[in-house]
Image 1 (cartoon, rainbow, N blue to C red):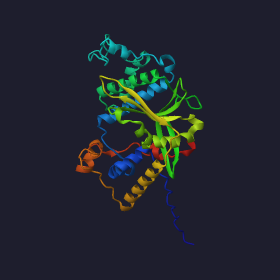
Image 2: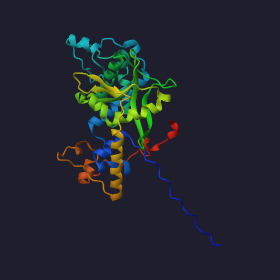
Image 3: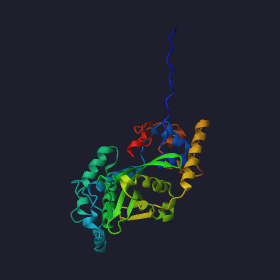
Image 4: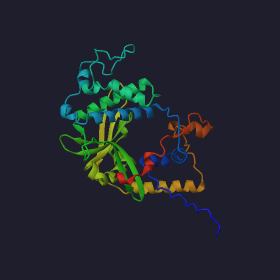
Length: 337
């Protein structure tokens, strides 16, 4: 009997796991979606806003994990920066460039424990992101330190999971309609007076007025969190509200605002939106055509796209294979949950 070669079984295709950022990218530009999620490319990442956001997130998460119960000491106390304003003092930290130290005559705008972490934060961020400019990292650290001080003064503590671990960078996983979704909430807070538990996404932004309750109620990110969070209740506890903790980026006037909505306000609109996006992506794949979404104004959305030069001019400088793949979005290790 003649030997026959074994028949190779086709590899089973793993179900794609979606996230709010993947959905948003597909809505924004099909070509950008292809570069990131099909070609697995990454760009130069030179946008200051992107770097600052990443650095603020890293710094805030570090402080939240190290000082989860800071409100026990500083909850509802008066911030020093209000005193400094009344005294006509400069509320922006002034650093001596030669010595690297902050001037002694500056009135500290934050909580002493957090101020002591400033240089440590600088070192940690620069070690993780050596290409980041020191001034940008310094600005990001100040935003995070001041933001976390305000967070504690407002009476918020970082909530803990069933094992007593601070709930920072919280994994959320499950189906939204028929779509397998994963989300990463920045932190879950518990208010020391009301006991309400809020799932927050922290953002450093210059557009705080744009985050209205109406926006938060319908934003895809919070809409997805409202569906996924109750399914993790045994691990993370109940969630009463979801929303954003906003940290202003202005250096001369610090501002922190939380905008939240009840977690029980769930709409099927997000399910329909995700279903439509996935159908559109399947159409692009079937046609093998991923259109550029160049709008009427040249800066939208290309101005903030990492692939603009590559896409529009064929300039591949800084374009490289992404080291994020297989990414956390695609691992789909359901047994974790």
